[in-house]
Image 1 (spheres, rainbow, N blue to C red):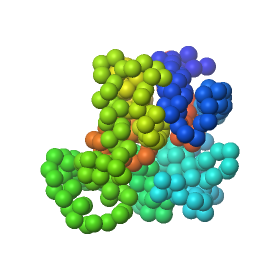
Image 2 (spheres, one colour; image 1 turned 90 degrees about the horizontal axis):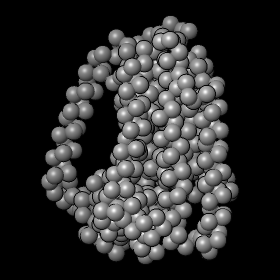
Image 3 (cartoon, rainbow, N blue to C red; image 1 turned 45 degrees about the vertical axis):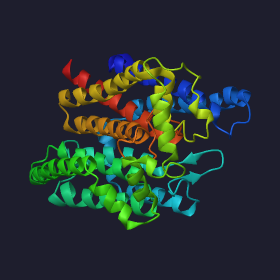
Length: 386
């Protein structure tokens, strides 16, 4: 089935998935929640393989079921109400790491915001590229309604759930989806967004290259965890025994990797009260165990996935399919940027996982579903051209 689409893309996804299991098993060796290496090797490994199996089954199902006409279902009010309800459910559960972003099912924690990212990619791809839509499109459909839905979901994720990382990714996906729209009615909006993007780039560059932001945030003298993360990103040694402790561990872990690393399973830092090594700081463990060379191979493989999605998006003659590919590439890119950048203190730590690599069933399942859809989009485009 997948040989008729992009086999290299499929192979890279499979290879990265296997690598993710290996590196998270290694990273969890220092996790105090695991009482023995036997449990780590058999219990956690079994759980990881089950998640991988479920993910690949979901990928195959999404590949088999996807077609452009089925996207019309996302317009249905019931689907939209269910999506908003799904996003609000975590508010009834206890916060984890300052964010109320998970539904605790006991045996599994579900993160609705990850599936909301998948939903918004498909929703905007269909809404802003309406060749296959069966209804008459108005300016309200093209601009007002999508912006209201994106703004509402972003509000729930960032303000109510207190999950800044997921909100940033959600907004980034929506931003790119608007930029690649093929509708004439969005041209003016696209011009404004391009101007805003350029201005934001220079503002962020100035802010992060000068002490202005750090000095201003410190002057606020607040315990807000997101503000603290911005301060620690600029200089984790301002609070080395509390807020900056994890970042310092991550930096030391990376620095000790050298050129070739200590080898898989031989990380030392993971045993030194270093938490979230299989999630937020998994990239630190990769560098420590595989070194700069190993991390470069991993990084290039990951970037190849993103690049292939973008290249297929440019080649696809169906604007909706092209938008899905662009949205998925954006999804993977921002996760990579925030996870690796957060662990290396280049950007504030947001707690977002490294897709296909980090521990986290919801993010992996969402990624596999999107990859299955993307492979089907590529397959349909190749079939049209033959």
